[in-house]
Image (cartoon, rainbow, N blue to C red):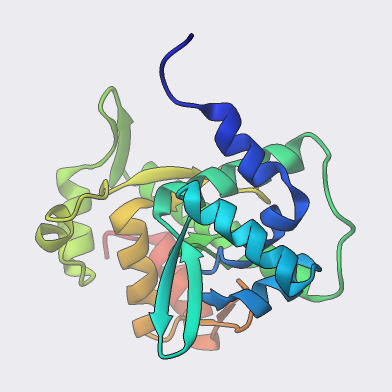
Length: 229
């Protein structure tokens, strides 16, 4: 019997359409109730409960209790990274759902990928940070350069604090719509929080769309032109 990670078990959990719909509904970082996830999956409450139990036992979801309500969320950034990668593969290989309505271009422009910026704007940010020499992909993986550390600290990021966490500072995340990388990891999360704190972006609830404000349009043009400042 072979030893090591049981890929087929995880694939089977994600591979059921109702469970895949539930997981995708949680990709904006929210916690949702079982009834809300049942609606997203298009199944009955009883069927949703069975699916949620399997996702919980498989470690893909975590549960939070608040009063009499139970909320479910993706258990970690690594699960979100896996899902975004699968979305990218599905898009590249032509396994796409029918496009729906005028919100689709907005979803492609800027959206949440769990807790960091994705879409055209996220990819443009990743490209510019790379081109400017602020992040570099080497043998040890994606990392901040000394110039990158200075620039991001000047932008308001607490890199010393971020390094105390267990999450990698920088991580390349395959963008499902652009099929190129955007920036994940602790820095990706902190940058998105800073963009929202400065009112460049706001979360268009419910869903994953991030709306760029008029001031944000100007600020992003300047930031992408010269991220060093």
